[in-house]
Image 1 (cartoon, helix red, strand yellow):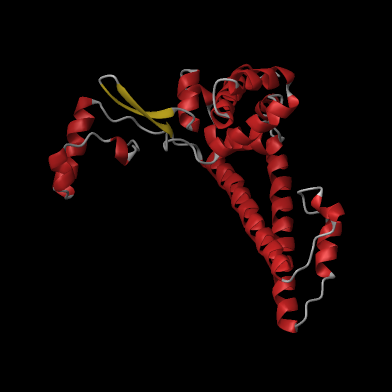
Image 2: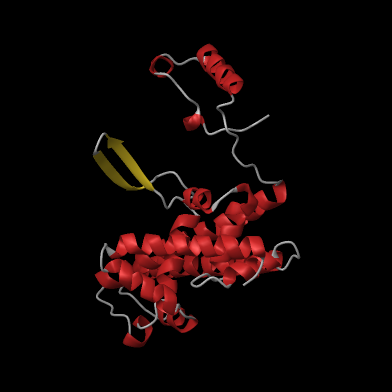
Length: 266
């Protein structure tokens, strides 16, 4: 029994126009006989549930961001300025949360709205903290720890990005070369060409939507921290847009990540 991507099943126009169970069955039987169907990778239960936990953490962070934006919007509409000492750091400290709790608006309804949002934020922060504790405990397992430590040695990659990469890929050996690893992340261009006319549609929509933004984030961080990558980025920006240059840097990080993963060395 194999699992395939429905979009990758070769289909004629006639089969698209007239779709029913008998037609689909004959189509699948035909392509199985032709050996044109490629199975996708299915992780074991442990790693799949570990991936679910990592993705849950990502959704909680997104929820935190939405609540923060709502709080800032409410303060802005009420004409309340955030003190300068809190605006220097993008992270919301315990002192900043305490300052928010001490704010008094002109009505009980307004105070309830603000305090309710602050309560939601505090709860999400607590959930996020507990999940990270659980992830660090899982990362200490002997079969995972060497991979995580190796990935953390890549410039711009911290614990969260390293663990995210691990839970999404799980087995690096399933990619026979670097190009397939980069394609899985989704850092390859989508191109349409006919004769000498070539249309570049930007990065392909096919790829892992959880790893790609994290790798791009790691690339921006690596540009600031790693001298060799900083030099490479400056050279690239001389002949292309910075956004295109950072994609090239992200590809370099994937090459490094693949190497340290397989060799399990820094």
